Length: 210
Image (tube, rainbow, N blue to C red; front, side, top):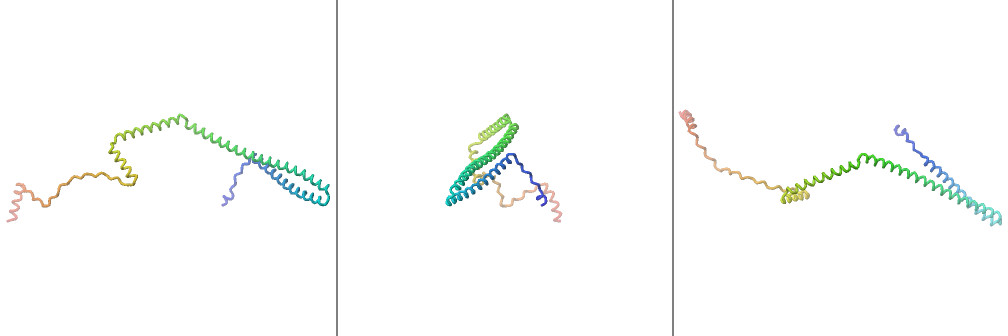
């Protein structure tokens, strides 16, 4: 908390143009106050001259109206001065805007110059040529693939694409299965034993019989 409230604010940069604008506005405000004061005073003098005429004091009323006429001329001059001050303020403010625009253009030009230094015209042409070569190479591959497929293959590819687009599974072709030999229902008869095996088992059988 202490760091937040104790942080120093950066001083604002006040230019000579800002000071000039401030002074002009102060002079304008003073003239407007003077203009308002004189206007109220002239209204009072006009009412006073009217009362003097009612009282038969024509000479005093005439003198007061002459004074009022002179102050009216001062008001006109004051109005012109106020208009001149406001015009000067507007001109200075517009000049400041123009300076900011020029500074922005200057920064933009410097950025463009640096970008042009990094990428020259030759570099752009080289990249464009490489891009064109890549496009031509891909076109050749497409032509080769297109020539190696038959009409039936083309139709199959289109059908698969349509199925994928519609979210359906592509039906795979049936794999032919070879017919297996049938299993015999009756148990096969045992094959006859060879003579040597029968001669070997004959003594064993006689011994068992004894």
